[in-house]
Amino acid sequence: MPAAEKFQETIQAVRWTDGAVEMLDQRLLPHTEAYLHLATAAEVAAGIRDMAVRGAPAIGIAAAYGVVLAARARYAEDPAGWREAVAADLEVLAAARPTAVNLFWALERMGRCLAGLEGDPVPALLDEARRIHEEDIAANHRMGELGAALIEGPCGVLTHCNTGSLATGGFGTALGVIRQGFAEGRITEVFADETRPWLQGARLTAWELVHDHIPATLIADSAAALVMRSGKVGWVIVGSDRIAANGDVANKIGTYQLAVAARYHGVKFMVVAPTSTVDMAVPDGAAIPIETRAGEEVASLGGQRVAAPGVQAWNPVFDVTPAELVDAIVTERGVVRSPDRAGMAAMMGV
Ligand SMILES: CSC[C@H]1O[C@H](OP(=O)(O)O)[C@H](O)[C@@H]1O
Image 1 (cartoon, rainbow, N blue to C red):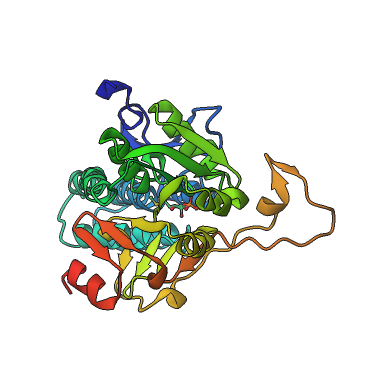
Image 2: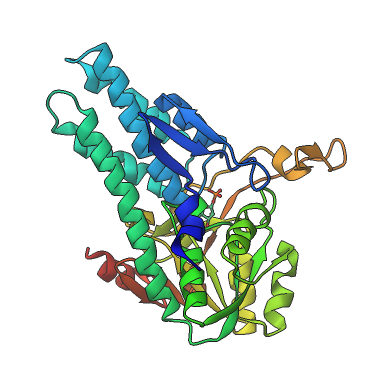
């Protein structure tokens, strides 16, 4: 397929355009492609909170551009005292969502950049935000190579949620491995979980796979174990929002049960995430903050309430998969097989 037709060459989750942040509103996909044009850090924070943009690396990249917007506004207001005001804007961005550590990683990196700046901070901060964006894309291609090499294949794979260009700077983490594995003939077909309640799989992953002409079958989340039992998949390949120091993995709700079923059925389990998703300050998965969103997201479908009136709904949107159920963690720095604390520390160089 000519490069220009590839998904990541035509669609970006978030980008800096003409002095503003353009954020593809993923709540409307795949049937409507509309970009939000955001001029303030508060608007970027709202876009993250309300999941116009989602996906751990994409959230971090959006926040980085949000810091540029904040610094530009605050420096214009007060060229002498802008730093204090920007610190408050960074707090607003940090409060947008709690689980994806990429958000906090990006804010800390942008904070280190602005600390040493004199005069107008915007050019240097914009360069740093663009580096974060470009480094993420490069990391995804490297992880694609490393992860695909683990798949002897040819085989089918199963994936959960969306980990493609829409969740990152471009190409994707787990979906990047799938793109690379398909290109190398190691992967023959993809089973994509719909990923209730927000339907990242049905709406976003399916859209990316169909666009790139990768054979994809959409399944209900509850059909995943049956697919594994059928022998049609050799690997489950997922992303992550935060990986603890011992290799425990926080990811979209439903990932944990996929790992249990995979182990039971002898299907290998791969987690693909850049090192900006690894949080060595968190000792294990129990310490990872898990976001719980409004129960109405579970009780509704397509914006219409389908659940019985009066019933309560519980909506944790992430869960933690213990490291012992993970066969490999793939980052841009390398692969940790059967991850544990020692393996994670060695890969992270700490
Ligand atoms: C490439 S990380 C994508 C990661 O983010 C998703 O969560 P959400 O859509 O709520 O931001 C999911 O956990 C994916 O694995």
